[in-house]
Length: 65
Image 1 (cartoon, helix red, strand yellow):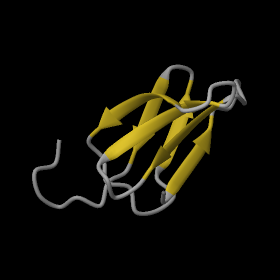
Image 2: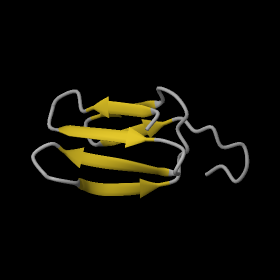
Image 3: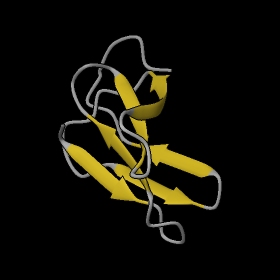
Image 4: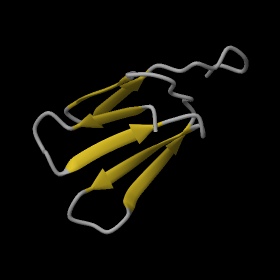
């Protein structure tokens, strides 16, 4: 995990990202991740959230989406 972001309004929701090419969405009230989104390869503090939108940066230089 290279990036971790807590939702600004719902502190039970977290999003993590790393080199595995997926974002994991966690609800701290659950025992495991509640969703996964494929795509970005995060290599630094590159996740932000607002309302129902997630924005990420990616270190990928080929096959960018």
